[in-house]
Length: 163
Length: 334
Image 1 (cartoon, rainbow over the protein chains, first blue to last red):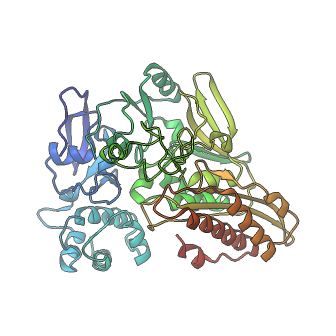
Image 2 (cartoon, helix red, strand yellow):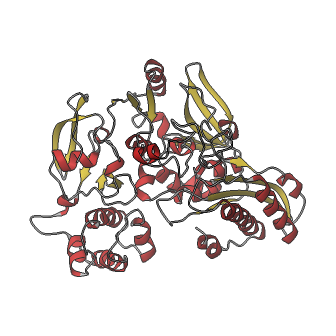
Image 3 (cartoon, chains in turn yellow, blue):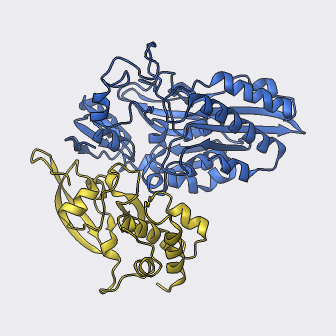
């Protein structure tokens, strides 16, 4: 968690967060991950390495999976930002969330939101990826538990499930 | 990681406004993708008062191509460059280099200009503030000793951008904007062999585009890394090789990761008119081994990086010269 000094200059950030437009005054030096967790309360976004090397903080900005710990919140003005919380549809986990549950793609679960968001970006762009394409899309996300085999299986299963 | 320092964010709409903002605020810096700079700010390496965000400048975000070659805007994302059809068809080394940078998330945000102007790297520099302080800082930042070569007078931090060698091998120029207007120069002139100040840009200047000449020879890029993704090259090599009736018509080899600047290998002109045979490949290996200057700036040894650079140059030249691309062999060393 990063507290913002009251001296920081703020600007109005308007963005579409998980499908709903909202506006907040954000410090110009605030990182997207801190905005999402501390201001918007979306703690499904994880701070892992805190330096763009592990992918745990991955969210979608205009549909593209990016590490939110090296993205300034103010630069997402008038863009669409999606987090793991936004994938739930009418109280039901989406196909990736279900397949990670069913195929044991999550163990400790810390990397899982980032993994799922990176996989979500992949499936929207390429609904039927092969294993090489899945590995490539997840190459920026590190997992210390699973050994990745179950994660790849989870994404493959989700791809075979109707959206 | 330390707290993000305080700064204001300016979002100019065109290059002129960006240069004016840079001129107006002495303690300002340009920010493009921010994938490297924001980490450095958190490491306490720089404390700009104002960050000038270049992402809203339309001119910087375009790739155009025609009979005069291709112009790649400095704000084009690495991902867009890797997907570009012109790069795939004509400038293969550029596409391959772009595809190998960091990971998909970094490629979506990182830009061509940012990668060309990437800060040099060293295990004594890319560390947290407390780590560097405990080590007495270093010649590159706040200190007066280079821990890599304590007897020397210069900083040996290595340049590790992937696009520069690909563009260098293909004879690219850079377009630079400053307070006095625009200028163009060979990309190689952007760099000098000094880890502390490896760019020749003056204070208010900004790289706005890279220009590639038309009718390029076939080219390829490969690198050696510790990890398959989210990693900088220990050594990276781009080769552009034109063949004519079984003999070399033109050969350009450029390297990254081994020196404080990316550079074009000299002496390859002697290969013109000769076939790519074992003797030529051995000569290329010798040239690389002689000209690279890897120092202990990474976790891998300098000797390993010297051999790896030579091996990459050999493989890529053989693959381009003999016609079949041994993809398995190339990817095995990534």
